[in-house]
Image (cartoon, rainbow, N blue to C red; front, side):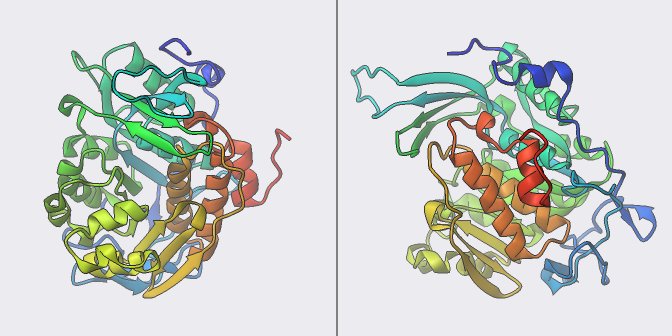
Length: 397
């Protein structure tokens, strides 16, 4: 097991400051920097803003809800392959992952000798922030860690990837959480985690992160499900797009009903999470292929992509549903696959890439991730993303 601190394998990134590839300028709308989403609107600019694609899965504001329409704004971003699209806030939990490769889980009172154990900075928010940063997106991490050596390692890993941590609090007397991920030989995982209330994200942190410059999109995870409504509301006030990855799945159906879904532009659950969102409704027990449509229609979210692991994903956008088989992959570890998928899908949709292409590129990123062990260290590299998303050769090969 690696010592707690800056784990081996990315110490060079931290020391050298490598990975700072996103230096795009501010988002510009109509010749002026974007200053925030109009109050009471869904975040789509009123009017036919022309972007980098021919269409967009969202649209323009109509009565506070999203309807299909053209991309809402143009991005003033530097040319070149390292353009994921503007600036993202990633709101969620940042933890230390303890990964355990084991053929089985122990029962109470039993001991099991693991095949391998190691630690690495992690959490869904961290993995998504890192992937976005490697795409060339300017990213700010919105969350908290403990004021301890583990928290310092998490922050150092993010800084080494070019992620802004100025809005990430270091809280005294609150240990940075450890997420224990058990991985079987077939890549299946079992996770034990808890983030203390003292490290929960607040809307004030979202607003503080937004003060660092115009925000193109905010990606919110569900580690703090009870605060999801407030966090999504805050995100909608500062970002043009709100992307939600409702993971871990909410256990209390009442929490789901408090979320202002009309403010969400893109929702990316897996099958279990989609069924959890629909709890108490007949659609929760319906066929897997109909979940994306059911979630979209139930909550009024214009773009919903439900992932189904090795069976691919189903995308509902613009009133149409399409099925996308998974990319071929040799599965070693599925831990961070959904994070790579969500980050690439969101980044590509935000710059106006057509949905089918965005899904294909996100699936390619996920396929790379599952083909090797680990979470953070299994994410696609800058060179790999350069090749699979932008079609340029990987300079490291």
